[in-house]
Image (cartoon, rainbow, N blue to C red; front, side, top):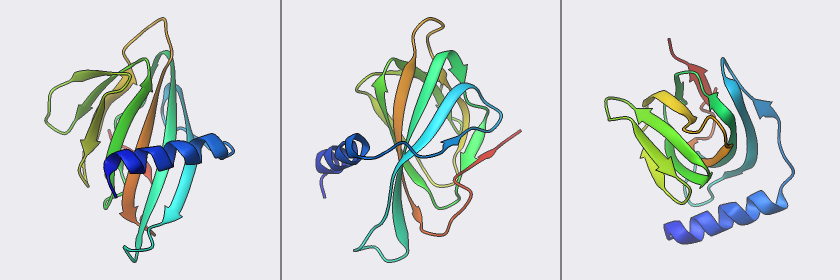
Length: 139
């Protein structure tokens, strides 16, 4: 499946789904809602999970890691997100831009780059179906 088709399918799922539970661990000004979850039929034992992360102005996530098997594709829906993964540089991603995180990555910076406007991103996880928790704090 082409990435554009996958994004379109996920966005359609987001538009049709009801908001899931809010997750948030040691975060300030951030709300996370699971919007899509499904087993991947042609990849036994793998699942796709999409979550929407809303950052209030100046909001941030605590440093964190994701499930050990998770490959993550992040897409900025609106606003601007400042991000740093592993030993990479700190970068600001604006609406329409994206990045990926390899399995086992540490996401040391994830925050709204603006103190006055909200920001939103879509994070898509491909991971082992029983790999939990999805996110854990890193000190």
